[in-house]
Length: 362
Figure (cartoon, rainbow, N blue to C red):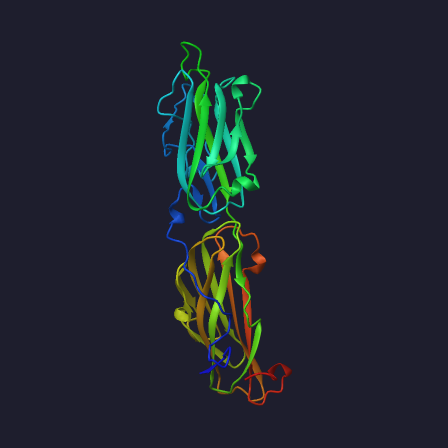
């Protein structure tokens, strides 16, 4: 086999050099009801899964919260929540929910309604993620402050989220009710209804090869040209990627037959489950691998072993090529699709080829 080498030390090349690091651990993102994996969106709602909370059932059907918007209406519930017991005196309530997220969201919106009735008997409310504020209300009991929030998350608020488990907390201070008043009646409901909508968009980059986009090598009919080396990837953020796929293609031009198997890519986590099309000896082959859990800042490399055999009728004064390209495609949206792929061409020069590009071929 005729191989392309990076240096006299005999380190086999092609596609670039880098060390590999391990991916993040094993969240099954597809199983989360509050995440639509295919678009990397989440919707966290007040429902029966919150800590230190109970669902408040309105005394009037018309006071029920609306269904979450499609397609969430078939995945998650929206309910009024309050403490397990509503006190007639002053009361401070803190309810929380733990959820998972693939890092900082690219964008987000907070929707919250603080009870029903006018004016709602609340002095203040804060919404926190991992102890940091992402929204608040002032003294709505005066009737001069809106008892609701409908606003995008600020850039600072979006940095409160991190990859993995997060804690969403809502704290509310209720003023004392008038003597003899019940917490809930036909015209009033004391509770919190909220939806937190999040979109995650990574910037997954196929790092350019140290060898550039083209190399030249001399070979002859019947010989094999090997392509060995590392392909590299990095997530530039702002969001992590819960999953996606890697696509690797090898294509032979005239007089070249490609030879590869799914083991052509030596993958480690977060990459897994590689499959191939056009296996064996063919003009073109494609390998697709899944990946899971690619946080912001993670750098990964994959060792590649691929080859092309020159046919017996390859003219000694001709040139041909063996092309490889690779692309990392996240599930959902990405901030910069222009840098998620890279390609490399091997110009194969016959022993007597005079093409100027063959001048430095070895």
